[in-house]
Image (tube, each protein chain N blue to C red):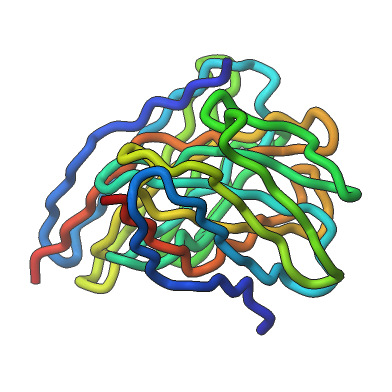
Length: 115
Length: 114
């Protein structure tokens, strides 16, 4: 069964540094998402992406965050200047279509630790 | 904005007993309600979902019920097994266009004691 993949599995960075988290969605999927989960808390929506543009973003997704689909397979999340509070598990997800009939498939996550 | 509340935060049951997790959503425009199971350190995985035009759905030992009037939906696990131990998240989706973001509840840690 096709899966969403993410790299790296764990990223440690210093405060103020830029990080790029990478995701390869399922190949025929059209909708892409980033979520984050601070340790012990619920999963929170960050941003959705469709047709090469952001379709919705949350309050968390401020100017320090950006997303890109640089080619036909990768979907990236960039944090320009990391803060301690950015430490979390970041999940990428994809779906074939939007709408209540279509499941979002989650990747295994990237654990980001900001020191 | 949409908010989803989930109870209880922790639930401990004996193997073979039933477990019930309840969620309440705030936005009446929500019309799709998936449930995800997350094992420690793993990705959330969909276990069952229900659409707003259905009141109940069952898949083997798992069932979900939806009360649109009260804006409540619940997950029922019967004959629990130790491998059911995990964190369970409910979610709500507003079918409003190209986004369909998942709004998650706060999670329930289910522990099934052998």
